[in-house]
Length: 210
Image (cartoon, rainbow, N blue to C red):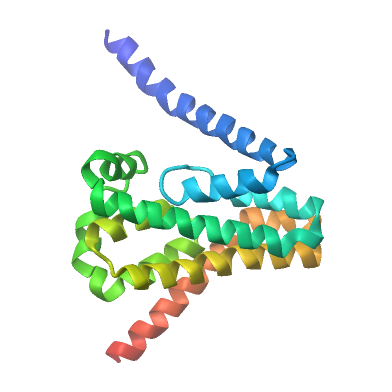
């Protein structure tokens, strides 16, 4: 029995990774669908509350295939992601125990709730902005924002700024440089965003306390 349990524990991460890979491949395949723009809107919407695959997976091949539609694609991703963020906010505000907590447990972010609730009045907008730009799961912050009672107008403005900056920058880079910039976007842009946010927040903290 001990051996079987051990083997089950070893298989579980592999099966989870395989599931994510299949989900990633399925999402990527939607970029070639005749209704790819609708698919992008749906993926961007659900990614802001529960779905693990970011809309960039769809955006990149869609923009590379039709660069002239780059701004439209970015706009659809932004609007749908913000709308999905509002759905995540509503989950946190009204369905935290039933839906929100299981989602946070799935992403291993349950511990963020107590800390975020204590600090949301001061740093809530920054949390939304940072999560909306960087690779940090945006859905975690949308749910936590609703659960912690972050001001809805503040949440909405921060979401629009963050998601718009991220998706329109990706669209601009792809429109300007084409396929050669794809690897940088996929492997390095998240780090650049993270460093930018760290410097930005650090600067405001320094101005406030020094």
